[in-house]
Length: 309
Ligand code: NAP
Ligand code: GLV
Image (cartoon, rainbow, N blue to C red):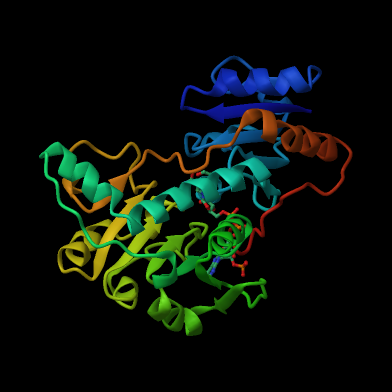
């Protein structure tokens, strides 16, 4: 039994070193060097070439290097029914909370506008808003959404959430399901998307749904680019229905040079860095799942294959 690592973002060696530093005996191969395909029982992947999982006849599990698994679900070359696991990690959750707090507070105090004013040496005080003025709505109240919600509550924000199933979360009024989506959006002045990308959530940040937000609401998408119907965002900003957007994820990454989002003054762009798996912190759960696989024990952090998250 052996592991293959598949990712194309230049971080393969970093992860290999991190895994072997902590677990020197792991039988580990990189996908882009010769390796015995029939020995591979576990693939650890991040945005791997679609179809590449089909070359491992004895594959027994696929692990995501991150929290999201959408790119694994989409690869139908993987053997059906084998467990898919994802990263659940305190450092990843802390990083996400810090990113969202930065975006939210920057919005309240017009920080983007002042950065633009500086380009034109404009001295122009603008009215700001306060924490008490806002209701932050978190779409996707799972591991990350809940952690972000708690961090916002600590600062004094009113926080509401929306999930698939009903749930209780101290300090957060939780809406659930399609039937309660509109009521949730109606109350929201800052919307944070932390949903997984599934067939149900694809395109959920569309004109119709975003029009239910409070007038002048602010959008923060830190989930996946596929949640946002990109061509519907600019008209919502230009009409004032939305006052701005902070986007970390895009339908195509890197965001193409000619994409209209680059030049739009009300769109803040970061290159998918809201929270990035830290090898040191994540390696133990990956190695533990390989040990469990070898011993026929249930794996940690499995997704529900029917729900796709
Ligand atoms: P998670 O724990 O699986 O939570 C997902 C949440 O979404 C759950 O609350 C779930 O509801 C809800 N949900 C799923 N489908 C829904 C639907 N159809 N309607 C309503 N609610 C629905 O996931 P997570 O660990 O928090 O991560 C969320 C996503 O963040 C990841 O999938 C990934 O795409 C993204 N992410 C981005 C970055 C970045 O750097 N930008 C970093 C890490 C993760 P239930 O609770 O009822 O099941
Ligand atoms: C990052 O986008 C992740 O899914 O961990």
